[in-house]
Length: 406
Image 1 (cartoon, rainbow, N blue to C red):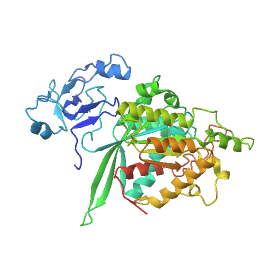
Image 2 (image 1 turned 135 degrees about the horizontal axis):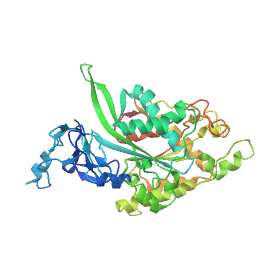
Image 3 (image 1 turned 90 degrees about the vertical axis):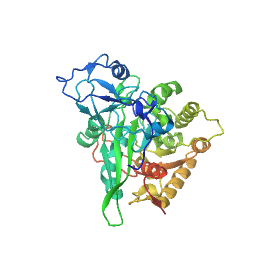
Image 4 (image 1 turned 135 degrees about the vertical axis):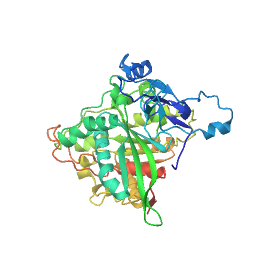
């Protein structure tokens, strides 16, 4: 175990707690250990009073450690016997919301990635394709494995992301506000492990992290108050991917109007979202305007395929990225430069200035999740992703989970 913390942030309610306050839930047959109403879980999930398996504490850890030495010696148990039926349980839950915690909690580095953007920016399609790319191409290139942490993640990814576009070949329905649909608050949680060879060329797990992905409804970014109450994970994240639909940029829309392209409705301006995100983080963390935000942010322009005729043939946006076992700095720098120059051409200098004056670490990216506009607005003929992995790999490299070179 290469990483150990004495506290954790719950990936569901985002409350920070000491590890010794974690609770366990009985895993025995309900006929052998009678369920009881769990009001904490019901209130958090808006499910009402529902009988659940019993909850119990870690014994002898009421916070009365006799010394700091005893506190630092504490190790989170992997399993504990239920005090009612004596059956051992491995199911650990958050003391604040009673949601099931990843079994890797406290063991490894947590990496929460907030995928945000205005309505119709393509966030759900991006998440769906990115996870598929990680499982296939990225895992192979980096000798890694992405594994869902529980059934909730398996089922939500299959039903809400994978099945619509990969099986049904249809676009994903718009994500509903977290205020009206609780499932929007439920993240996709994975463990990401990397395999390396030691000096005897034996393979071993060298690095593990817990990845949490959030797909935010665009309307939840329309006000700071909504963001503060529904999107606490943004200011608790370790990385932000802000998707911007270039078809929302006035200069681009003007150029493409009358050329047979079906342009989306105009939604929240991207600079307004950047402004609200920066304000939210500053207020939550008590940062002055002079202090740059340390959370890395990737400004990623989606649907770049729609701008094919506006981009030079030699542009890196026309080619696949080349991150084969390492983060390719040369490729990133050329892409970052290209997107910055295009933004200036599109009169997007204000977006660049907003990012530069608020965030210490940032990069500009261009990508397409689907590769083309869906036929008749709903049917996907063929999925041809391009550069969807770039922002994700940039964040992994920033957090020292993968190596980089020129």
